[in-house]
Image (cartoon, rainbow, N blue to C red; front, side, top):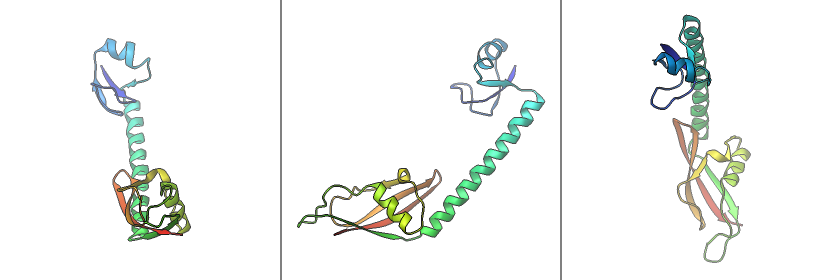
Length: 147
């Protein structure tokens, strides 16, 4: 029996794959649980159209991430914070502060997509990674200064 998987099934295949299974497994388990469809011509066309649309949307999102990375370029952000005489900062520089600084410069980057290579604990220069897309990574520099 041929079926089309609607979700990933461990040991069987991934979403939108057409796989052969024993009739009892497909009819009594996969189809009633909503994990699969019978692989007839209309379902195959429907899945092919869904795959095409998802690929188009994914390509559009990736293009937007590449364009944002190109716009950001070699940006350096200056962040001011309270610091002691030795240069040690009070508190921490967070991804929210970096996100707010990027928004002030006109770039909308979610704070959940900002990662520090090294957590800033002293005044100075640091590198921050922006995870704009699963295939698009970008680095910016931040300069931590005393208020």
